[in-house]
Length: 52
Image (tube, rainbow, N blue to C red; front, side):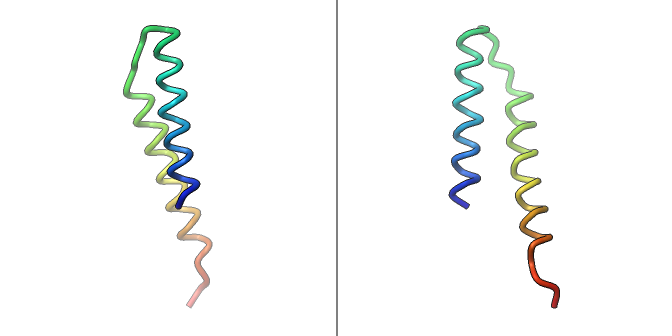
């Protein structure tokens, strides 16, 4: 769980740095990246559970 938090912090940091250089703080891509990260994490976690 700590890894996903660090990944989200990395995405936010990259978004802020990119926004400072381009003066364009587009939030659509930020939310898409975070949503994709969380959904991929949930799918991986669900598939790695042992069958009962």
